[in-house]
Length: 312
Image (cartoon, rainbow, N blue to C red):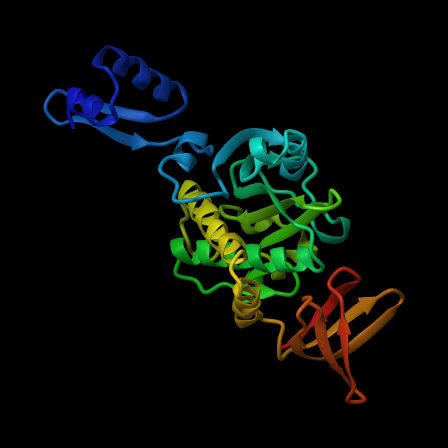
């Protein structure tokens, strides 16, 4: 497309267009100029760009503000810092980092990934403080991540209770929901998400290598910008659904339909005790219903238990 035509379509005065092109080149975009064919985008930078993620994003709340940084201790930390501005300024904020030095996982574990290899994102929202809020938001985020990956890939994504996303039983993403109730009324919640995109197998520690994977390892070439956009749009849809009368029940149903833990024999630890049995269901609060060897069905809460072994 000719520069003048492109400038007109973008609504940029011709005298400013060259400056905008130079700014894009400075950010790492490679643009070819041909006297007859006009301009052509050759390549985009490896890093995530706020403008690319936010441009015409089909959301009403989640992702209405997008921030990208090169490095952070944790995107959850950045989201909590923004929460001080209150819901009018920060509700729906999505923070992306190319690298985390102290990324958090469930039960104090770390989430580490090489720069430019993952989607590392935290979304800040204000939600009514209701019992089981963390559990239902974990399910909502899991649905959004699964659907976003499926939007971009050929793979079917399942949920491994309570907060992992798996493809062929290998973890490709994880979720960490943190909340800070503020008394009566809505409280602030940060939904942290990590998606393995471009890592090679050697990146993962030996002890988890059999159970973890990136989308690239599974044969998927993913555009991280498109995946980031898909995640924000899907999460916006699911959180919007939760405001409807039957929305929470629908989130529970959809998450249960993706749960790869139901029907399997597992061992889990609660306190100093280990229990083994078949997973028969998820309770409304996202507890795991386990049929033990003596036939009893016992429910274990996600916040107090840890799966230590899982069979077929």
